[in-house]
Image 1 (cartoon, protein in one colour):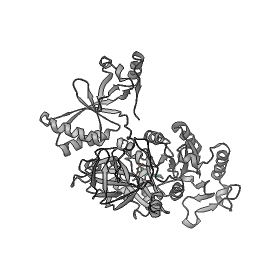
Image 2 (cartoon, protein in one colour):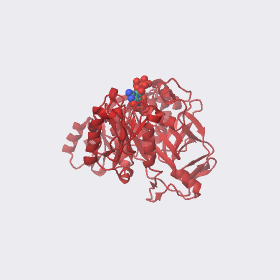
Image 3 (cartoon, helix red, strand yellow):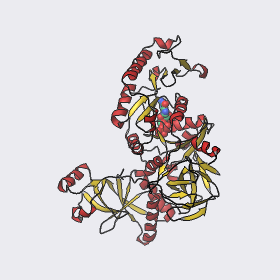
Image 4 (cartoon, helix red, strand yellow):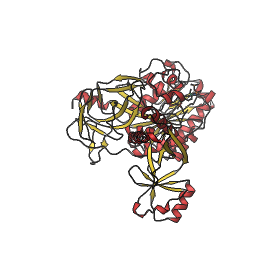
Length: 524
Ligand code: G4P
């Protein structure tokens, strides 16, 4: 591999921002893009979200609801790094796509609203990151408003998320009395709402403000110094290795809206964020980013990004080597080789053609039904398969039928393709073979309904059967169909494995008591 290519790969930082809706992900993304020079107008991303900026190639449903259904990719350069941010839907109706996007990143930035602390969606996404052992960087946002006490927030991180934390900086005051942050890592104080050139104040060797300043006389400064002392004495110690292993989360405080603490965050983040990481194959070999041969896997397929063109785009995370437009690739699953002429890179919603991309990058390949979620593509002659992407336990279910029985063929074809694409999960009842769809977010059903109509010309009837607890069975051979009941429905998944859909926790416990030999398990 050439030195230049090696350098290009090691410059990549690929991450996703995870947060609960309204914590400030869009605002943060916008500020990061702004610092990276990727957007000139700091209102672009926000305007897109609010619909003021609606472009034609926005999925219809996205326009209607003014939310981001798709996970797009944004790229910019900063301090010799090339940063790839993978967007995740910010609505509470997030979907499996959100989870799968986390399979394609090397680290995550978790944004927490200082007034709200850890919220439900953050917790779910955090768990997926934790499962992968990827480093998580925490940004506690909205310090310009009154929020919870910083120590309380740190405690919450450790208790609710079960991860150790290290405060990289610490707020001095909050809300109307927010004076700035005490930057432990850079040994300085960064003042809030202060002209650029006067923003930073140095600290002396005891960690006190080294210059005379009115701030010193305030109770907020004294409080912050007390807290810092406590952190120094009783807090976790800083460890680059533990951050890398995802065992310790560095915590930053700031305010995305007022653009405070973002640049410091970005610079420190880039210092510690991992370069592209190796991936395991099903054959249990490791593919390194610096391996010569190109390889990647598909973590998401998005249909109809542009309804006028009816295109599908397969999103590929490049694991090793370099991708060049026009190159020959082989799809491991089918062993078929073909030349890739159309590929796109994404910047917010402007799509550009990509000629060259390297390990760590995300590219989109135009797809006419060739790819499936989890597919591996390779550039060399030797094919292999990257480890399977995990399947996620759905929580919501509907029974679905075609409104017009004459459309049954299209109905089944549509379902088959959308299930393959990973848009929705498929189950069927044992004898009647009724189709039941499962999802982790309500929105997946809406997208399904919409796409069945527009792409397969089938109107579907969806009867909600509510939320259920889905459990797979370790010892399938011991399952008897008579165990199925109204509150513990036994169905088949798409691989014909048994799955119990329990009405609630109570129904599951009751089942467990009655059938102690049946070993249930959940997916992620
Ligand atoms: P999301 O993508 O995570 O859903 O959050 P988003 O950035 O859209 O932010 C949600 C709301 O929080 C927005 O207000 C945004 O302006 C506000 N916000 C983000 N960061 C900060 C911050 O540091 N301080 C304060 N005070 N507010 C912040 P909104 O009223 O819902 O929208 P808008 O009127 O600003 O468009």
